[in-house]
Length: 286
Image 1 (cartoon, rainbow, N blue to C red):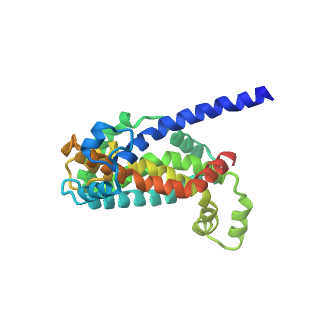
Image 2: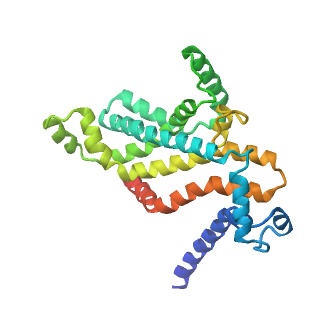
Image 3: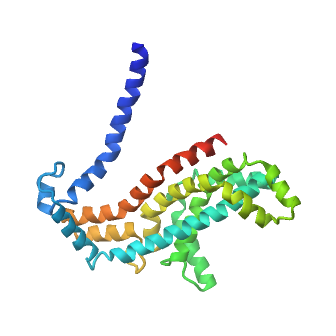
């Protein structure tokens, strides 16, 4: 009995240490948004000097700050994230379904290409990608850089591999007899996907959407490369970085801006964490 208890205690201690390590930066942001700059510098760890009125003042100063343009950046991030997630779920589901139901050398090669692309760091392809987007935009007579459609297309490309990988593992265990029965009843391939396959993918699509959503919402490197740090179109992380550059020592405003950028994804994760875990487990098993 003593050995069994000790075997459970050690993993629990490690889990607590890891949790404290991960949550400590969020704790610092959370307590310091209730302080002014002087209180943060004097004691950034304790609650000394914290007040709700100071938080409301910090919030007002950040939201109404002309150098931040919070609502514009927030709206841009929402549009980019929603469009990217819808396209990833739709086309990722289609690709995964076709790969699973067409057992050919080509489908296997395409699937392995998706898997292989997950191992390539973004830093390796970012400069060729920017050059390609510029050349393609010039050829088509449109601007793929510094535009929302361009960055949405880029996110679909980078997020497609993981989306197809997770959805493929889920679709493999969907009985093929359902599709055969629908086909016998006269349902078209498009009808089979949208009426049968897509509804069955709902749990794992929620998982993929949350994972991709957190990455897209919090991403800084790709928007800074494609949209530019001084361009008119900015996502929220890029706007926060520009804001930090304008107020180097005003930690009350900087941390409040960081809090506003991170809180939407924290709320969504807390609301949908059950669906996330369920989808990940089901996808892994199937």
